[in-house]
Structures are given as structure tokens and as C-alpha cells.
Image (spheres, rainbow, N blue to C red):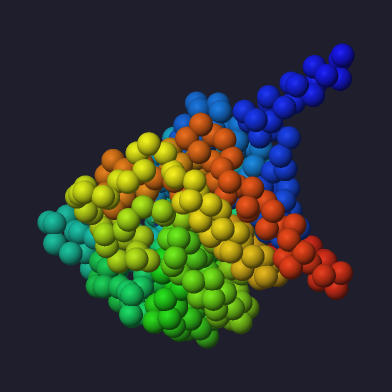
Length: 388
Ligand code: XIL
């Protein structure tokens, strides 16, 4: 009788919470870290259901917005670490590999950064000094707590040339090398990454490879390259992802998928873009799944995730982390980008926090015989060992 009750209870619990399922971090424990980008409700533990998912499923976290320049350094000489401290405390308390995102970027950086007291463009010297002050204050504050920093985010154009951001216009091409040097000065132990989207496109990838080679030739410390991984159902192809990871691992770098999501909604702009300044108005047919995701699309999403994870697993020796950009579909930035107010389905957990078929597909990818390590290759991933 007792056993019957227990079985019935577990059945209900399983159906409602997926509690008996293996977890993401467990499924990939010998392969790579599994991360999620968190919002304040999650790392301040205000949303207890989502916080529970984070603690159970993930062993690495990224701050979705809490460490961006506009949040921590809104005015000259004025820092606000209230939320950033909570984020880092959450990571340290829960022994998660805690990521800093991001030190030098052209978006979500206040205008004053690039101006002098008269509102004219700042000089190279002033901007370099500001960059150093910012990096030393922010990365220095979390020295020994934040394990890896996205030092420079999105410095490249689609054709592989350097984006003419205010950073480049004012400082010159060497702003990237300087940012990495300042980050190394702030925390000599931290891993330092270059992070970007659409590196799967050949031209942009070649630009990134050239950039990394140049940094390496100058003796600048760079630990890894982050592929943001804002993907679509059909793009980029598995072969492109495979080639991209290979290109960076050949340079002796760690590779991480830093902002993974798979957008199933129509994309009015460029296929592989994640340019936050892109905006489109809602139009007919652009928000097709307001009543839920049809089964057929749900299945395609699951297959797509399985395909992507087999590529990541193939490169487990160099891929140190796979981080999702959000926890549940309800959190995703894709509900508001590039069109505000859509219903998106890009992540592994649905709006109620339940695992979707793509969760199962991802977990099963770790057990596929073709993806499982051979006896010879069964040593733990050096990239995930010894992280702080
Ligand atoms: C996004 C956040 O998710 C949004 O909340 C915010 O409004 C805009 O930025 N590439 C990045 C991330 O490196 O910082 C962006 O995050 C998504 C694209």
C-alpha cells in the first residue's frame, strides 16, 4: 500500500516538476559546464521557482544585464554595485563558475563615456584612462570571485573588419588589446574572453581569428572565444558550428557557447544577427505561436538542440562551457527582440518552469553512443577542471 502511494506520488511529482529527471549539470559533468544568464529575480531569489531551477540544473551563471557599464557605472565617478554584488554572492554561495559580462561594448554603455566635459568626443588618452578605471574598479572588485570575463563584446562587423564603435573611433584599433591588458591587471587569475555573435559566418570568423592571432602575437592574455549562440532552427548549420569551434581550438583557445538560444519565430532582419539595436515593428504573421508551440515545431526544436549538442560534445576537449541566455521561455530577451511583445520559445524550460522536449533531447545527447567518450578519451575535460 505504502509503495503504491509512493509510486503515485512520484508519478505526479515527475509529471509536474520533472523531479526524477537527471539534471543538465549532471548529464554533462564530464564534458563542460552548463550555465544560464540570470535576471535579478533569479539571483536575488525573489522568484523561488526559477531560483530552484537554477540551483538544480546549472553550475555556471552569467549576468544578463547586472554587470553592464550602464548598470554599474551610470555616471562619471559613480558606481552602483548593489545588484552586481547580489549576483556574485549568489554564484559564490552556490559554488557556481561565475561569469562577468561585459567590460567593453558599444551597447548599454552611457554616452558620457565617450564625451568630454563640453560634450565633445573624448580624446584617446581620456577614454583609455576611463576604460582602465572602469575595468580596475569592476573586475578588481570581484577578483577571485568572477572566474571569467567577457572582456570585449561584439567588436567585429559581418565582413570581419573592426566595427567602427566609439571605442575604435576614439582610441584606435588597439583598444581591444588595452582592454585585455587592463582586465589582466585587475584580476591576473581570471579567464579573459572575446565574445561575439555570428562567428559561424566565414567572413566574420576570419576576422575573429585574425584578431586573436594578433593579440597572441603581442603577448596579450586571451583565454577563450565566446560564440554567443543566438541560433535559428535552420542556421547556422551544424557543419558551420563545427568548423567555427575547430578554428578557435586550433589557436589553443578554450571555446564557450555563451548565450545559447534557438529562435523559432520569424526573423525579419538578418538571419544570424543578435544586434541589440535592431528593432522591427510587429506585423502580420510575426507572432505565430501565441497559443502555444505546435508539436511539429516543438519536435524540430528538440532535434535542433540535439544536433547542436552533438557538435559541442564532439569538441568537449576545448568547449569549456555551454550557457543558455535565460532559464525559461518567459525570461528570454527574444520575447522583446527584435520585435517587442512576442511569445518566444527558445529555451529548455517552458513558462511554467517545466522541461520541454528539447530538454530531454539535450540530456539524451549526452548518452548517445556516438557522443559518449571512448575509453581513451574518457579523462575529464581539462577545460572544466580546476575552474574557480
Ligand atoms: C540583452 C539582454 O538579454 C536584454 O535584457 C537587454 O535588453 C539587451 O541585451 N548579446 C549580448 C547580450 O552580448 O548582452 C544581450 O543581452 C543579447 C545579445
